[in-house]
Image 1 (tube, one colour):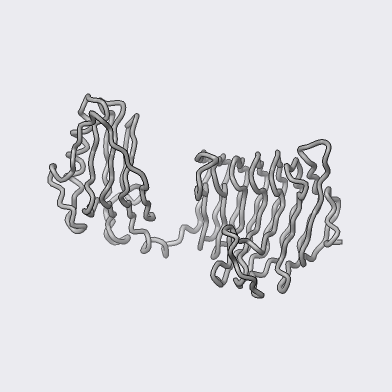
Image 2 (cartoon, helix red, strand yellow):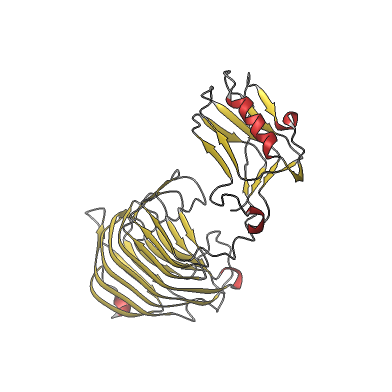
Length: 348
C-alpha cells in the first residue's frame, strides 16, 4: 500500500454529479465515511445518464474501511472525480477482522474512469516491516504503455525467498527490479518487453548501504527492451550485490543486453564519488540473441572498488543489423570469459 497522487482532472458536460458530502460523508479524516461512499456509489451505478460522476470534493480527507463497490451499473461511462484525499485505516491492527487483500474494490464494473488531483493513501508505512517473505508470484500478466514512466512490473525490496514464475510483463520501466535487502530471489520463465529489462537496483543512492545476494534469473525472454540484464548502482554507495546468476536468456532486439552500470545517474547531474557498492560473483551463462546496439556487453564498474569474479560463458549476441557487429566495453571488471560473442577482453 502506498500513496498515489492523481495529477489530472476533467469536467464532463451533462454528467450527473453525486457529491459524497450529500450522502452523509464527513471528510475529517477520522470519521468512517465508508457507508456514505457506498450510498453515493449506488446512486451513480443506478443512473442511466451519460457520464454520471461520483465527486470527492477538494479540501476534505475521507477515511474508508475496506469497501467493495459493486456492479454491474446502468451507465457504460461512469466517472469518479477525486479532488479530496482518501486514506485507509492506519496500520495492520486496524484491519483486524477485515480482508487484508483489498482496500477499495470495484467489482463487475465496465466503462469506469478515475480522474482528479486528490491523493489515495494506503497508509503503507506500518505494513512495510511485515516483509513479503516466502512468496510465489506465478502466471501473471502485467501491462502498461511503453511510454509510461515509473511503471515497474514487480518491485522487490527487503524480501527473502521470492519466486516469480511463468509470467508476462510489458511496461514502461523495469519488468522486475530487485532492490536492497533482498536475497534468495528466483525469476524463472519470465517474458519481458517492452520495458527496461530485469534489473538489480538501483542501489546505493545517497550513500545507501546496499545488500542484495542470491538472485537467480533463468529461462527468460526479453523482447525489444531498453536494457537487458542490468545491475545499476549510484556512485557513493556502499554494501554489496553478489552471488547473482543469469542463465539461459533469449534476447530479441534488446538495447544494452548485458550491462553493469556503477555510474547510474538518470538525471545526469551526479558528482563523482570514490565509494561504491561492491559487485562480485556474477555469472552470465547461455545468453543468446540480438542487440540493437553494437555495445552488447558493458561492464562499467567503479574505478576505485571494481567488480570481481564476473563470469561469462556461452554468450552469443549478434547485431539486429546484419551489416554490423557487436563489441564489449569494460571499466575495472575482473573475472573470466569463455566462448563469448562478442569477446570480453578484460576478463581474459
